[in-house]
Structures are given as structure tokens and as C-alpha cells.
Image (cartoon, helix red, strand yellow):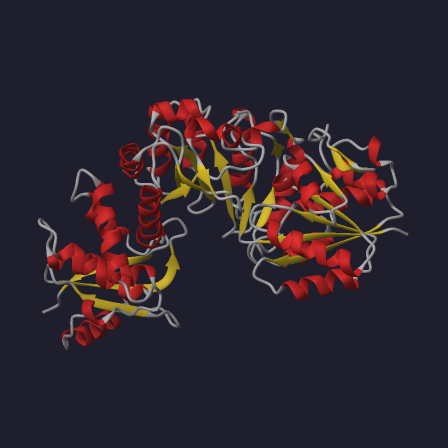
Length: 554
């Protein structure tokens, strides 16, 4: 009996790669005489430990799913395996699908590469089919390397959601695919190279939704590249999840989708507005507000419609909205990035991800690097270091801004203070840039308290800010987003009155603290009031605990 091992190297323990389970499901279906096993690891794990588990399996074939975050470790493991065992090494996945010849030339210990979708090619290889007869398989034939076009599967693959998968999932993030491919062909992305979008049977998708929702996970992340490409289908699945929530779908399970914002219609927006708070997260790609940039990367986006729809999705405050921008795209200089940032932050998303262009193998932009003077890393993740429009210093500046923005805005630790900051200026990019460099130049450690102290110092020194308001907003944010209930010393207001107020709250049946629930309290400096928070129910969209304000009793 042939023994095949599929190794999944995840970026974090909480992640669970779906690709190996698709491969195993197809092998189990088509090759009953083949023993197929999945071994998982993470890039943070010692290589020797993963190698030991693979070698213990005594496999005839060892396959790896290769991505930009794990390719170095995958190749190192493959080389080590080949030194110790006479096995066949196979790689698949986006990191090797479009550069198979180069990988095979540089790594003689790799025997096969599957380009494209791997279920059928892998099962055929395990079944003993001749390499020349397997679609998408790249291999050596004597002194030559044979490269085949990426394979695209016809029909739905078998479900990967077996009892074994669910047991292995063990509460981690669960990934769900209800379609493959993408109707768009963005020049920085690979999804549009998969032959257009193909939708799985919708009843199967509903079944899989329920299976994963009841698996013990807290997050089901749909990996469809454009979930709402078929509006009618998307609406039906959104309604199915909403109607099943609290019944077949346990409460506190969240579903994450990638959607195209400008094609949302009134019906879907109305359906989404009816969703329970925290049930859905939406990730909406903006990339840039520069029309010339969007044209250069083959994105045909109605930006005014997209912005209007984002605002409509945000209005009920029941869905976490994540949007993104990418630095390093064609025609995007610092002024353009500034305009894009200011336009994006004006929407007030819950998260604005500031990313950096990566020139992936197979992406159109990688093949056109000379036109944009891209200078990028030759090592994964192939991040752009400079362009015709952005110097290395410009990109480094944006990295500093991105790091600070993640900690100050995207962390959701300072929501009230961010709103105050955004209302101080007509150019948020400049204000956040000033904050970012002040923190970088003065920070001795990366603790939350030191970040808070430096932000407080910077804002209090700005013209037009009220020191007491800045203090009160920061104290409110710190208490409402951190259930430890503690303030750093510079935010504390010491007063014997606080104990009296706590006692008064306890005497009132309406404000009496629930048993076992922690409470925090502080005075406000800008008015004769105090606030308190009970760490009972956290809003799943904003991450905040409810703040209650009371006027001083005396």
C-alpha cells in the first residue's frame, strides 16, 4: 500500500490550511488502496520537530502546500527529508504554480510540482498514473523539465469536512470555500487566473456552513475571492446564515467574507442590515482612490458607489467592516497615497489595513516590473521596496505610519480618541504621520502604557486640543476596551469620592454590580461627572464594553 503524507505548514497555530484536506478527500474517494495522512505544523515551530513527525510516517510520497509565508521552511524540510529517505517530494500551491520550472531547476530534491488545482493530479499520481498523463503536473523527464499549464478542475471537489478534519480543527479558524476563481483580473492577484469564477452547489454550501458553524470554531472565514459575484446566490446564503443563527448556527459564531463593494445592491444591503450584531465581518478591497492607478492594475471600480455602500454597511453598526489600501502600486506617489488614505479614513471603517504591494509569481505586475521600475525583494513575500513614484525612503516612511496606525487605530483600543483626532484636522494623514514619527522617535518599549503616554503628550501639545478632553477620551477608551480595568498613572485622578460613588452605585438596584463581574470607575476631568464600566458583555463589532456616565452625586 502506498503511503502519502500531505504536510500543511500554517503561519499561526490558530490557522488551519484547507488545501491538504481537499487533496486527502479526493485520494480517499479515488484511491481506496492508498493510505493518506495529514501532518500540520507552523512556521514558528522548530523545523526538527516537524521533520521528525514526517519521517515517523514512513511515507512513499510527501506533499507540501506552498505559500509565500512557508516556502523557505517547505524547501528546507523537503531537502532534509530527501537526505534521509528515498521518497517522492511534491509541491503545490500558489507559490510554485507559476514558477514550476525555476523551482525544479533550483531544487533537485523536488520531484514533482502541481500547477493549479491539485485534487485530481495528486490523486492520479498516488494511483500510479504515468506523469505524462497527469494534467497540471510538472516534472523531470531525463534531462528536461516538463511544465504543464495550471490545471482547473471541472465540477465540485469532494468535501474536505470529514470527522477527522473537524477533530483536528479543534476550535481554530475554519475556512470555507463556496466558489473558486474570481470574475476580476487584478494585476497584483492570482485569483483571476483560475479560469473565471465557478460556484459550488448551493445546497452543499449551506450544509458546509452548518457543519463548520457547529464545529466549535468562533470564526468561519470564507475564502471565496468575491463572495457577492453572483448577487442572487450571495443574498440567499446571507439570508440562510441569518435565519439559522441561534438555531442550527450557535450564537457567537462569526462569518468573514471578502466582497466587492461597488456591486452591492439595495436588496443585499437591506439583508445585511438585519444581521445580528457581530455575525458578519466584511473585507472590502479599495487598494487606491487614484483612477490612473486603478486602471493600471485592471480594477474597474465605481469608487463613488463603493464609498456610498461602505457607509450604508457601517450605518447599523452590526457588521465589522475592513477596507484596505496598497502602497507601491503604479502611479501612486506619496501625495496620491495621502489622498487615498484621507478618502478611506473618511468612511470611518472599523479597520483600514495599509498594505504593501507584493509581486507574486504569476501576477501581471511581476511580469511588467520594468514599466514601473519596481525594486522588490527576491525573497518571499517579494515586497516592493521602491517604484518610479515612491523612493525607498517614501516606502520606509509609510511602513512607520502603517505600524503606528495598526497599534493606534486598527487595534480598536482608542476609538473615541481617534474620532476626536479625526475631527481636529482636514488632513488626517499628516496628523497620523506626525503621531507615528513622534512615537517612533521617543518610544523605549512597545507597551500599551507607553504608547498611550506618548500619544497623550503629542496631542496635548497640539494647537486646538483640550488637555482634559484628551485625558477623558483616552481614559474612557482604556477602560472600555481593556477588561483589566486599570489606568496608567498619568491618566488617574485620585479622589476619595470614587469609593463613595462606587458605594452609591451598589446601593441602587438598577446599578448594582452583577455577581462575578468586574467594575472599573474614573472621574472625568472635563466635566463634573464620572464613568464606570462593567466587564460583562463586549460588543463583537467595536470590541468595547459599554460605558455608563453619571453626574457626581455630591
